[in-house]
Length: 211
Length: 241
Image 1 (tube, one colour):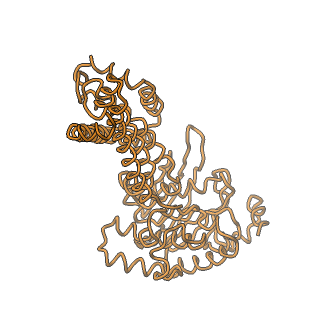
Image 2 (tube, chains in turn orange, brown):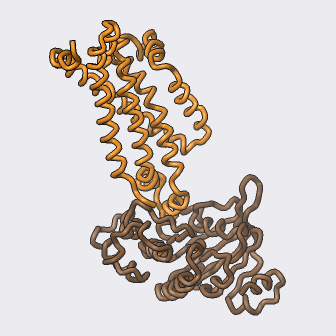
């Protein structure tokens, strides 16, 4: 059966899986941002935390994704079979680029600008919001982009633990030794990654400022 | 004239190493005090003690009669203009927004901020029509300095602190900026503390000069006294004129 025919025949299921996939990535990216950006900010305030936190995020990144999903299954609360476990794994993968880019973005703000901001009588919160986060925004957004694209790819493995998403087709295709079925999952996943990458890149460009 | 700024045996050190002091020095209303010295003499430290970016490790610094320890740092800094060498203009904000920043933080109504920005840009010789909407990277070094000065004057602070603000400007523009800055400060009656390592700049701007060396005050007096003194610690500096 050809790829197009398979897609046509299974379009309803494919659409559902695509939405599942988008949902997995969107939710996990949102959670990763909510944790990673504040964590990155915290690291700029207390340098002593830097090595352990970045170290942890780095180690998570080195765990093969299939293994991480597997490790999570027996965990209480965050584990088990299903989308929840998949989201936890995706959040863990997304953390490193977010923490690292937030930290790098803020620490690379020109010290003179920070000094001027403080000297003009900005409160710490104003320095953070008006100056540091704004100037770091393109770098932080680049981190978001990496996390999202990574999430779209790794998200296909969610199907291995019953998390749904486009991986369903890929695993099914592998089991059937049918490349049309694999492609039915892989092509939409690749498209999603490209769209997310392009859209976020545009946003990043918009936020850029010149020295 | 009342003393607006007083250093009382103010000392600042890090990890037991003394960078400045004990320093005793007063700056009166309307003075233009230039702190002169080589790099590492403690000039910038002294300046940062005035707006409470640093607090003295011993002794105290009084601004308007109140110790900087007792001031709310943010309130104090909003009432003191601050210009630094790298200027630190916000690269993502237009000239207009850079200059209007403190008034906006102080919640002035928008039309009043706009009027004030226009007035200040004219004051520093930058026609608002041409410059208000530009970004800092679209300005020359001298123009950026002018914006820096305008920004420091925005909320009409009685005190202006300047840390080598013209250090990175070419010599011709620098001289022009000095002349204009001096007349501006005189006209507006600002009390100025100006840090530089350039003796000529010091003489061009100052009503009083304080010479610092290795964290210690070695001379304080008027420009005439600076020219007249025979103090061996001062004369080498004068030789650079």
